Image (cartoon, rainbow, N blue to C red; front, side, top):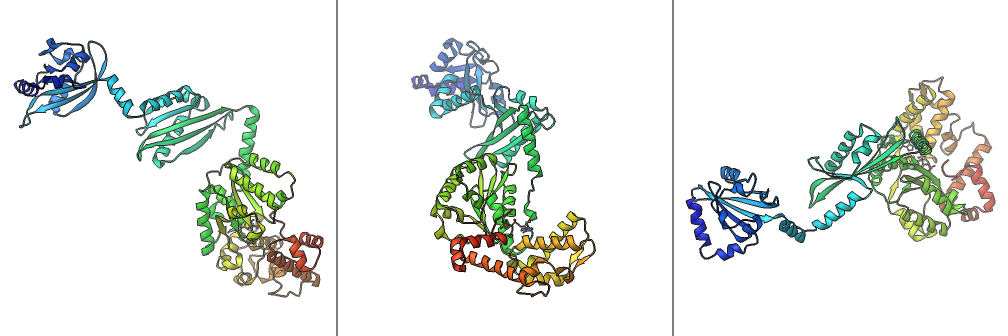
Amino acid sequence: MQGVMKITANLLDGYDHLFHNLPVGVLLIDKNDKINYLNKVAQDMLDVDGNILNTSMDVLFDHASTTEVKQLHHHKETHDTIKKSGKQVITRYSPCLSDQGELLGIVVLVESLTTFHERVSYLTNIDLVQGVLQELLNSHAKFRVVLVDYSEWLISDYWWDELRNISPYVDEWVHKLAKNAMESRREIKDSFQDNNIMSHHMEIISKPIQRNGKLIGCVQFLNADKLNEGEQELQFAKKMIRKLEKTYQIDDIIGESPAINIAREQAKLYAKMETPILIRGEKGTGKYMLARVIHALSDRCSHPFLRCNFSELAGLNNLDMELEYLLRSGRNGTIYFYINEMIAKDKQKRLLEFVNNSSEIRVVFGSSMALTSKYWYDPFHEMIQRYQITLPALKERQDDMYLLVDTILAKYNRQYHTNISKVDSEVIEYWKSCTWHGNIGQLEKTLENIVLQSGMFINVISQKQLINDDVKENNYQHTASSNMTLQTAIDQFEKDYIMLALEQNDYNKTKTAKSLGVSVRSLYYKVDKYKIDRGAP
Ligand SMILES: Nc1ncnc2c1ncn2[C@@H]1O[C@H](COP(=O)(O)OP(=O)(O)OP(=O)(O)O)[C@@H](O)[C@H]1O
């Protein structure tokens, strides 16, 4: 008491007017909680006069924090309610200690909540934030904000009602989504379909909130629809179709050679990007399969995967309508455009526009053509060339032959209920020396034929089973088989010769026909006859 009196006397001596003009209320409290001094601002704020001196703090506030500050000797900032007016104030209690650490009294600074708020809103954008939050609350958006400790901070009307209407089990799922979004610090979009009732569908978007790199919480938006019966059936059918659709996974890509390992790594990387990419490689090297893997690895995997051959599009008069249709049916998914022949430049222009403006669909191109720039519309050519994956031809990955043969054989054993244990190494070594124009696709076809023809009767595939196989026919240059008729040999030669000419002329049919000295019509006939470059089935 005496100590405080001393401070008061020293402090106030000559400076009384300064204390009275401070923008905050100042009170000095002695060890017995008696008010020893209060400045003018404090008097006005607390609606008291000088007579209050030497009375207890209890007169001013309910539960003032003086006892705690006295015991612990630490500062405390809190808000108190003025007994007389019921108004809230911001209070800061500071212990006043002697040099020996003995408590002399407490200094209390008081500020009205309104002044405090005014100051905060002047220094920050708090008003704007509050306005936006209020707008959000008034809007139809259904959302909630949870803080890092998972406590709910802001929530729109009917959020939980809406969820529980759909299923009683969703609470856990929604909390888990918030947790995942905060832990990964990434936006998570997930949907929930009540399969039993099939009448509701909902989607939750969970976005982590960070400020200056610090995680504050997470906002979750709810999108819920009550579906009508037609939509229900459609949703159900779409789901079933997607399940039935063959999906490839990254492990389905067989091979350990460096080129295939690189292609696999590129696929993983490009799957996370949205830019168009081009997969190159000879026929049957797995371009379509890789495109499916990229789709399966991407965030679009639960949406459709479409395939479209350019040759079909190029012939269309109404390209716009066709593209519109593709966009509608492939929304949010991936489309695989297979470039199997040149297309007119105006159509390339239109396709470029389509790719650039259709963020809802991801485009993957595939081609076994040379794609020499001079025949293409520059910006289109640039776009498709920017991100590329090149798949090696089978002859460039001979070391994978054993692995591929084993895997393909196992697949056909399963499919045709046969029990062939292996392919003789002599056969595999022979196959390694062959030129496989159709690459893995052709290897599959060869093995399938053998399994279908001899599968029930053999345990090991040996030279004997090769008598009529495709590869022998395709590789007449390696083994001129006496079993091949002259006509077959001539046809084979003609087919290979045309394929070579097409490749050398960038698949331009007019130029190829000219170089071969035949009419374009007759070239089309041959191309059709030998099923050259028809694109994928
Ligand atoms: N790395 C691989 N591992 C296992 N199977 C493969 C691999 N690559 C391709 N295949 C198989 O080979 C066959 C041909 O593959 P795909 O159709 O993807 O080739 P493509 O390059 O798109 O052919 P095209 O150019 O004729 O359209 C498919 O049955 C596919 O499953």
